Image (cartoon, rainbow, N blue to C red; front, side, top):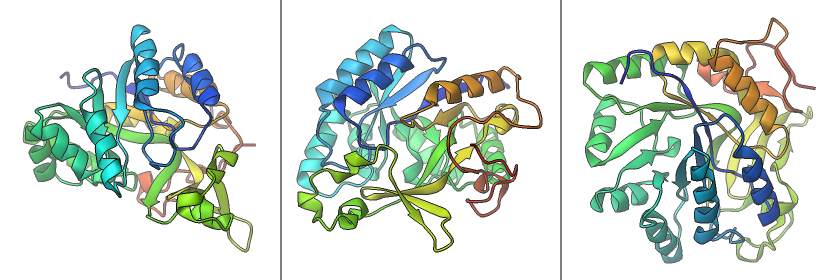
Length: 306
């Protein structure tokens, strides 16, 4: 690996519950975007069954034909034997690399001798853990979303000293995935039990906003997942990311405006950053606090997208 590798762009898995038609339309458009890697699959809730593994594999084959690297994302919270059966099928797909988002996926893939991507939910903070997973077959790892730039720079330097060269991926754009629970918050909002939720989260293709008494959007509720209320946007940090050794910037899909988001990050990795008034991408509050070692909801640039 060269000392200053070209920063790649990846599309993370869609975190929200969309219709089959919306998934198809989204990835049809994504095939023409300047992203290098596309993550596919349901990583949040096992009850979202509109898309089967064969459907994701079909989309993956089409994207692979356009030159994209395809990665299948595993579920983050495994709660039942049925979830484990689905995980086994995913890991044994025989075509695409799998992103392991919990330790059961790591165990399945490493035991089978299969390479894998380590997702941010594995909480990888030190070279010793990364060394263990590298020996188990890890090809790439995503930094925890709350890790600061300075902490990550030190970790990457330590990894280089120890000869660990698996590329690091940083969550660079989107609502930050913060927590998962066995309770479905969206179903509770509609006073429905989790196992008879009637898939109400599909009414919210970008999650359900949770606001403070002062009307500040604090969190986004997405079924069993809690996301940041504001969108992290590290577009202006892309040159520094590449310089410190980050290999991949992850962009988390949103239902609107993703073509513009990808275009902006593609320009940033070519050194074409906007002027003092940053390009306003989509209708969202912006945050970058974690990256700068501050509270996650902070916005160090003071920019609000219209």
